[in-house]
Image (tube, rainbow, N blue to C red; front, side, top):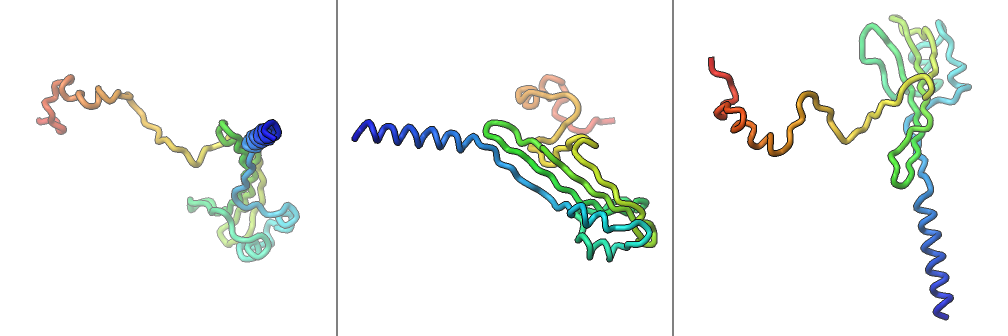
Length: 152
């Protein structure tokens, strides 16, 4: 009875280990189906007809000279002990003129650009990097006397 229990325990442990190592695939964003994007015609469709055909965009252009809607979809693969990796990204850009008519529909993929990490845990800083000791005793070493503002 005991050897059988050990065999079951080892088998369960190995199965759990294998399952823990399987990748997790996550999809983010919304990308309209290609057939729906093909139905949008430059010079014919407006913002309203685009919204009815494919829905509201993920984001809109922020700058006044350019009026565009952006639809973005990403597929991210997460594996145990590895950083998440973007394995697919699709972007559809629908551009409008001043009257609200579509001027063009553009499609981009991961191969058309570089990956930009939109969610990081660090803030880049520029300049000299100081150790904690240098930060604590910086005023004593530099001889500034502890004043923050230079006296004229």
